[in-house]
Length: 162
Image (cartoon, rainbow, N blue to C red):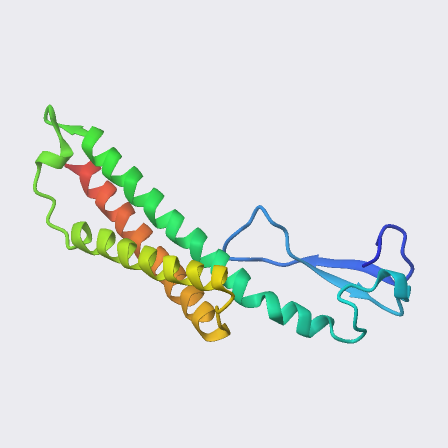
């Protein structure tokens, strides 16, 4: 671990463009000829930093899956609230038949994602979360999050046009 301010050989490159988490900047970092004192070594074994980072990936992937489920649950709750509150012709939009499989798909997908993530959390707590399961959770939940939020926007749009 090193303090980078005025550190010879350290420079920050360009800020990378990302699809999500835009509030967290992600930049290129260059350490050219930087020397680090043995007192600043993290993890106790020199040359093992990459493996130490890899060891935390399942946990980090689980956190991303948890965030995905939270976004789905929040998006679905907000969509339902909006459609209940939205009035058209003097009646709540919910009273009109909005023919959409999204009314079934979104809550079902969200519920299944919650069950999957609850299982992953149990594995984190037990210390048994493996890389494959964590990767599946991150991949599937974030893809499903996009589907559910797209469906929520479609439902709200239909409710607005009625």
